[in-house]
Image 1 (spheres, helix red, strand yellow):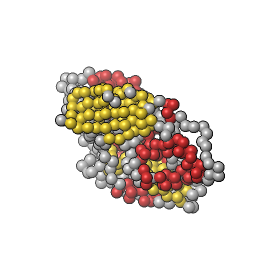
Image 2: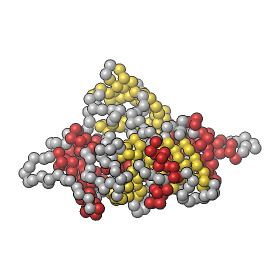
Image 3: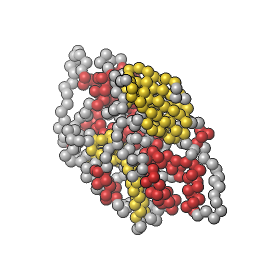
Image 4: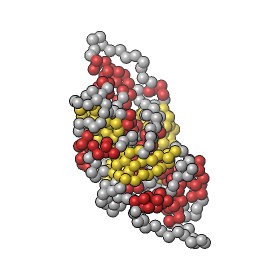
Amino acid sequence: MRAWSPSTFFRVLAVAFGVSLLTAQEPQPGSLPTANELHEAVDDYLAEREDAAALTLLTTILARADATADAVQTALAAPPASVAIGERMIWSLPYRDQIVQAAIFVPPGHSRAAPPLPILLVPGGQDSELAAMHLGNTIRMYFVGLYTPPEFSDEMRDGFLKVLRTVAHLANGDLDRMWLAGFSWAGHSSIDTALHRPGTLCGNIPMGGGPRRQHFRLMRHLEGVQTLSFCGAKDDAELLWNLRELARIAPGLKIPATVTIDPERGHALPLLGMDGIGAILDRTPALSPQLRQSGYLLAEVPNIESPYLRIDQIDENRTKVPTQVSVAAGASPDDQRRAILRSMESKIVKLTWRIEEKKGERTLTLHGDGVKKATVFLRGPTFTAGTKLTIRAGNKVVFADTLTADPKTLLEDARRTGNRLRPALRTIAITF
């Protein structure tokens, strides 16, 4: 079954809500191809449910004479048909040969001419959860039906982010102010996604959930990321310990974390402090979309991915955690738990990078400590077409040329990630 294209979807949505849409005239037989035809072909490719069928559509697009890199970028970024501002609408998007549906709420008065708004996804959420957060100036959504991908999986992380990025394009949301919240399993998943997809979420809000032990070795990925945790004092004892430990170590790691424990509640909503979430989203500054001049990506498993880099293959012997940990006789329960965390914190691999500018040329140098393979995503705003670029893996040059955009890469990246506003111009595979 084919998914509706966005143009078809909005025509149906308009009838349902009584909204008047302005649409371009259909091309007449024998007329020359128009930019609008390319836009529709791109929309149909991105809306196709099955990946195999989408590949056929991609091949057809790339065979078009007008499918230049500039034209494809314009088609990807083109605003969609008008949305029903202030109304609840259902949006369907393809992901891994399935259709994921989300209920989306756009604040009244928002428009494409207005500054983009923060975006919040609450997997497994419902109207009452959104209401408890007092989200006045935020585009928010939750899944319709039961979309519960495997917990702590790439399918989960990338599915959540594809929905957020799709809505950024659909409803004029801010790519640099994307938030993920959730209760119970979705609470664990919100912080897991922030840790395994660093540089994508402005903040995460676990409610009745939080970090597991294995998450602590990646905590440095939360530097600068708002982490708002809410939990009942009568909830799971280990969860509560992990949240309090996060609050204890957060200042040293430069994590803006707040942990609120509701003394009267167990594993249930609402929780003390939730009514202040909307105000925090409003005042939290956006992430910088630029890749830092230097930094690192940590991993305990493959497929850790930021907007610009992905660790594809690792030395798995470097990440094996010990089965037993020695602790001092008479150690307190707190000290015993911290000894376990310390035994795991070095069981990671690291991909480091450095960017240098010299004589009109940019050089990106990568080093892999326990990393065997990686991918570089050359996307804006850090990387732009026309830039002279050299990429090194250690002392080896793997790319040296003036950067140009590749239409195939642009389209494939937009379909995979949902990022129509900043698709990758090219991808570069790295082997160490």
